[in-house]
Image (cartoon, rainbow, N blue to C red; front, side, top):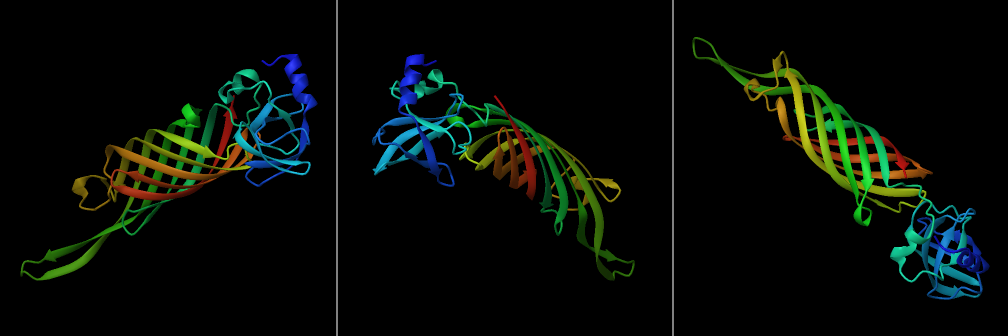
Length: 278
């Protein structure tokens, strides 16, 4: 932790933010003492570090601060202070108490509608729960459990011959339904994690168990229908892009995803709720 003398020296060169851009990647501060190249920190009223960056431009009494790293959302009422005791940015987290909106760990639940490429198209749902840990270079290691169900109609043409050899043609239509239970592991990354709005991407892969029926029969290769899924275990791959609204340690997301279960693919649209844990 920095010494009392260092904190006092930094506060003597402190100034308040005037404004920031929408992504909170750059801010304006009024200070005649700060100059181009100075490394500065954005602090809360109780001396917790929210973000740090460098002075890149000067115009009269105003200075532009480009944010190098934000640990939590920049509200706009932070104190900007010179980090005159920092020689290596890697040491900042050891020197200061950090305010984190997005903790090193996060729990996440999501629900979505799904459109599967089975038959002429089948509707379904997807529900997932995840445990997420931020790791090297802020990559997020993810463990996710999922449940999905799908139902619809599937058809196949048929040809029948009677005892005279005459043919009759038609289409056999059957209802089908399937439940999918999966466990996945993957990686994610969040852009603008310290802002009010952020973008998050995630890619996962794992195993899924399919339990389904075609008409009154099990969903197997013997059913004669191309369901693209069969009862039993198979590979599941899942990717999502999420637009997130961050409110403290809570994060509400709008998700767009793509999923493959065995040979069937699905597009998902849904919402998620996440909670950061320090």
